Length: 115
Length: 111
Image 1: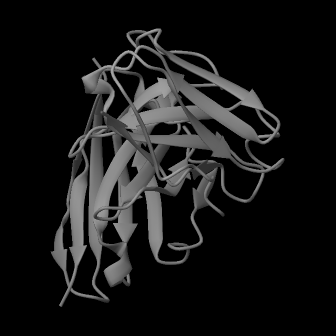
Image 2: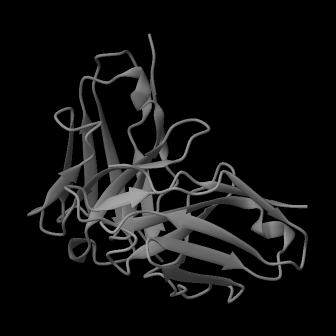
């Protein structure tokens, strides 16, 4: 069974940093591209970032470019999102999702940016 | 990175059929057969319902179907059931500098 479990969310002050993790199981992690997608409270889905299976290709939404860094460790079956210079508008549930297009999604981790 | 355009809401009675549209451009929906549809119930993660315009993942009811004409994709749900009440999002591959774009979402109400 495919499982994606996000962690690392929480409350952070504007300008602060946070690192999200996604633990994958139930499939060959190293064979799939992975994504972060977020959803602000009461809003729609927003694609944030994607990384190819071997990390050769990395993409970011304009809204996070230069502030967020996606990475993965295929040996640990894990996906990461380093978020720096956080803003109030980054407040959202962050989902880890497999593949392009995403087929399996984790349950999400809430990031709240507030003073 | 403009979002795809979906109606904010649609509604239907049990047993009826409804269609949700998803309009993009020739750089996304119209240019590729990589449109997907997701169902999201409140407080839950999105669930893939349709991929590559019209394909259903294993386990998804055949009441859900997808199609595309030009720059507009559509999701049709036939035989509406109470459990279908949810938010629905389309997504598409895009030729822009980013690989994926979502629609703004459509809230389906089963009357």
